[in-house]
Length: 117
Image (cartoon, rainbow, N blue to C red; front, side, top):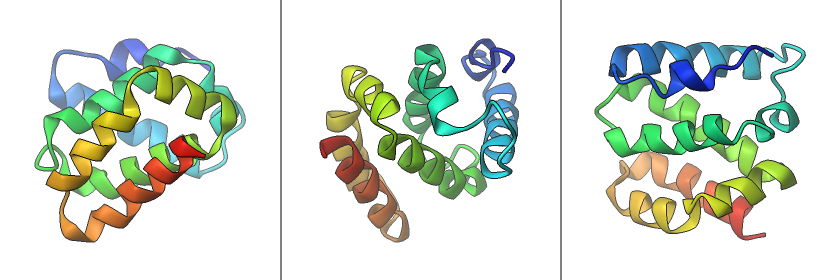
């Protein structure tokens, strides 16, 4: 797996969005090397994924559901979940849940449930 975190942390929102679209496509497509266990090893990438939500739901809103599914799947992986917890994802997603659109709140709760198990 080529390191994606430099692109995922790029200062331009458009570049970050394209990087995460690519990541989601590879992850959901089952491409070898892009499973939750593989992504769990990349702390910088996990930090960038959580940071993506800081831009708010208006930033690439069409990607929001995919990013919620991605982080939700990562929260179910023990290693990724531990890293996400270390990165402060529990208080972050608790606060984010309040601001998330109502139809996305169950996905945010699923992320929290995965992180808290």
